Amino acid sequence: MAMRVHHLNCGSLCPAFSSFMGPRGFMLCHCLLIETEDGLVLVDTGFGQADLAEPIKRLGWGFKTMTRPKLDPAETAWAQVQKLGFSVDDVRHIFLTHLDLDHAGGLSDFPRAKVHIHAPELDAAAARTHFLERERYKPLQWAHGPEWVRHEVHGESWKGFDCVSAVEGLPDLLIVPLAGHTRGHAGIAVHTDGGWLLHCGDAYFSHFEMDVEKPSCPVGLRIFQSVMQMNGKERHHNQARLRELARDHGDVRLFCAHDPDELDGFNRPAGL
Image 1: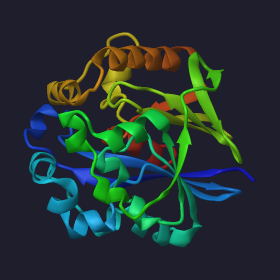
Image 2: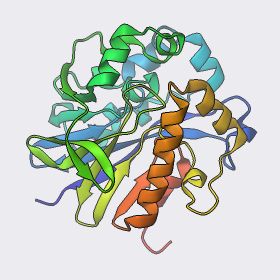
Image 3: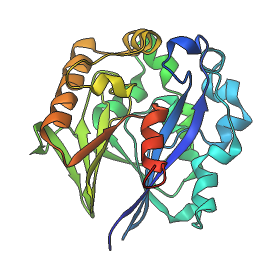
Image 4: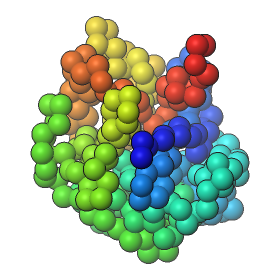
């Protein structure tokens, strides 16, 4: 059975100083819903129903004030899964690029799903030793006790990346280490009939950063990434490796979590 991949926006963000965030002045939460032989798979979850009900408690005053999330019930993965004709219980697996609050908020909407996560990311979210980690990780979002599936940083080589983890029972999904933004940040690679998709999470924020010849980034996004990074050297190194991947492997299509132009590129009708 060929996998079908749906590209979803699970949370619109209209940050303060939007003119510095790029030509379109807003961001979103690009998630994937994948139809597999083992049920549905989500890659990241965006905001969940509980985040909309109690945004200050679950997201924090600072995040809500600076990013000004739209918090539209129709944008939740929970609502979109059902709009596509599925049951919430059909979601058997969730793969997280990382546990930042705008990526993990919908976990509690799918309590029966196994949640796949890089082990260093889960450990960092549990310890929250750095002030950034106390802001970005919100334990309320996983207080329901999800069934975590830890993936250690080891595995095989894939298109120039080492320690890439395959997942038992889901051979068309790979976890690709992309640390820097957080300690255990990862990309999720999806093998489709048309080639590979690589969800890069927050490894970069603008498609301009993946320009092989002249990478650039809107000033607001550049500042935000620098402020939020846990390891700048690793982050820049992995961005360079992603540009090399885009240059050398035409069978891989990269996209990040927050660029609206990239999401439009997947959802635009053929021929436009």
